[in-house]
Length: 568
Image (cartoon, rainbow, N blue to C red):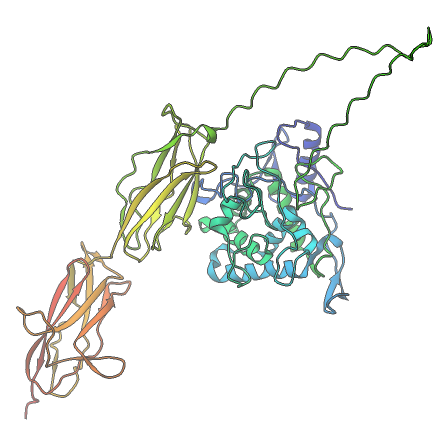
């Protein structure tokens, strides 16, 4: 018999129920969870490593949408082999809760394999994806997916309209969730549209990023959990990743419980036969909301009509109707949320955004959310997006970061890290949940530079006519005394010190086809600043010739090459 508990809807205060849930978890179901003297739970760090506060959309990937609170059985799974009635393949039959639909299980394992290759330091276990998939959608409604992994109908959470949930105004014009007014969590892993827009992945190779496809959703969830260079084999960092996905201690406890359960053993079941959860964090005990639609409030029944006296009945009459109760006062208007009070964004002393390729920018983008009265507005989500042809990222490798404004209304983006591509790009700051003009900042990446070139050896470079030089030219580049690695360079055999045009005789290089060339482009120093040129050859001309090497940043070195007949 699976243990169950339901997280109370926001605003409810039932201490006894919460205490029972905490006790049950801390006793046997939540590894890594501790309970303080007041019965409150804590589990690891609640923020990404390094103190980053750039979660998905303030409320994480799901916008803190409701989730299933069913807990796994206390008994460990103990499957035994059997044949699938639908596919004929061998599957295992044991504890029903341990069965994961075949396609869904395959999606989790493929996502783990992809992350093992692309982010090996993350150490993502597929069982963590399974645990999150269980509490978010009951493993895609028990595996009701087609052969490509797409759900037969969209899985949608409730409207995030601030009525018991977070308030997230529409960010996708209903493209993902069909709701043009408010956002709703979408798909087996319950991403809100604004997060899916940048976090979505194509996990099944069909060229689309569909939040209702379990392969796409599982891979996106894996990348989301692995942000900020997390190592999920470290418990505190795993806790931070889960809390970043849905910022709730109860959610963390539930996911960790399923993670431990699945680690003890799981088995494959046919698609569509998975066990569905029964308890949701936004429902009363005993209810079983569908993961595909939000719970609909019941319509209040009409008041009964009081009995009226029968005509001509004399003393034998029905009771006299009571006067109606005085109507209750109209509810006071709901105060606006902080986001609704924002009128515009102002720059908050952002410095000059320049960096050399491969290095961090010295300045950070900072903005201030202000009301019409130009007062700072706290607790507002600001999204920073990198736009343009660039490989620059924010710290952690992402091109989008969301930061909540502080008490002064200021939000500072994570540090920018330049890639190898030089040029300008844009960082755009916008308010999440409001249609307001954003602020654009131009950032510039300059190429890696060298200001000095020297030969690594001093042997004279000589050759006989028609022969080849015994030694290859090797140089070392530095910039302000430090090694200048990955610096672009060009080498040209020139006519003279005063005429840097390409020579038409004397020493030469060979291209891949063995043809004579006297200019080499697209050269790059290695990580140690060393540049080793290809072999040089000589034609029949004799004399002293010059090789000139130039680098980005202005370093220049001219090397003498001598071609003379061998002594008799």
